[in-house]
Length: 247
Ligand SMILES: C[S@@+](CC[C@H](N)C(=O)[O-])C[C@H]1O[C@@H](n2cnc3c(N)ncnc32)[C@H](O)[C@@H]1O
Image (cartoon, rainbow, N blue to C red):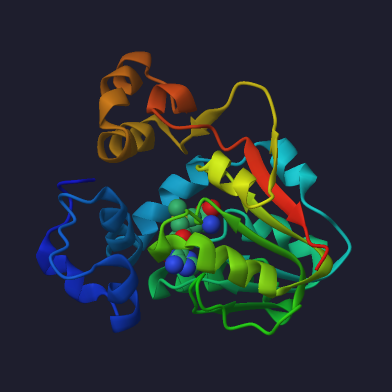
């Protein structure tokens, strides 16, 4: 990923995106987080193939609350979590800054015939285009980090602002547990072996080369379309952090 894009690609960002992801002097060959932001905009279908293979633990999905009035998801991407939320609320708003990912998510929602009670809108953690106390459940999956461009304290405060009193804010597949704990979040993790499940062995070889280069030889050697998350060098998507708001 570090070598995939160059500084010339940064022109794909809108001004709002550049102000969060690419301050002056940024170089995607030195900053892998920035390279991911370019992936979402330059090769969204490639990203979607990866996200489809990296499925959430079934108990994470089972944990998600049901019978909700409104749900807001931030950083929805191409819908790995969104599609699991559809039956859990009367109304769902998916906020996603990258236009090419919004397009794929809208396509999936249309195919599932769920466009009537879902909205896919642009926006960022630190300035959510939603009113106070809007949703019962406000959630992000593999999107929120403590860094300002990807959420930070301002982003967490925004998620809590749009969550109604008694509602729940959840960060699925979190990566900074101590930081979230310091902000009053409880942690849940579900056990069991987990593998990335590609559609075919050919896809496993192709995508491992790009996304898990250290595991690419192992994928070829095993000749399988699946690869353990640990072998891929990733924490498995088996956990979440959440807070029930008492405001
Ligand atoms: C790894 S993807 C995860 C997407 C999706 N939630 C999933 O689980 O497949 C990270 C997502 O966070 C979004 N994102 C990055 N920075 C953001 C920000 N400041 N505000 C909102 N979303 C952001 C990206 O556009 C991308 O869709």
